[in-house]
Length: 168
Image (tube, rainbow, N blue to C red; front, side, top):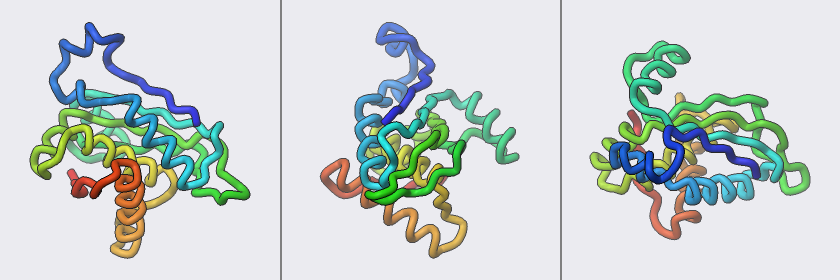
């Protein structure tokens, strides 16, 4: 599995200068979550995904540019090769796409839902990966299927109940 991170800090000395929400971004944890998702959803180990971490200003720009919606949101998904879940015999291979996380929004949602910002970032990453695989939640039957897959992955990964779903 190839996951690349685009972070707004160059090292620990820069990270400590950012708001607390950014310190909750645990790239090792998110990489492990992505690895489990690739295994569960049968994505080839050479499949690529990137995770960008942005501030509210940049997320607002992306949200308005791509969805014509105002303000910052928690996460956005940009599929590339329109991959779908594979099978054990035929895992999907290609460029899955880009996940864009906004830790300040995630931190507010986490506080409102009563769980940690790290849990929220895991939830948002799982949610975004499912969007990259073509899942949606516009219709109730789609929502039920997508959120069940999200919850199942998170419960397996965290070894406990998944955090409560949040929607910005």
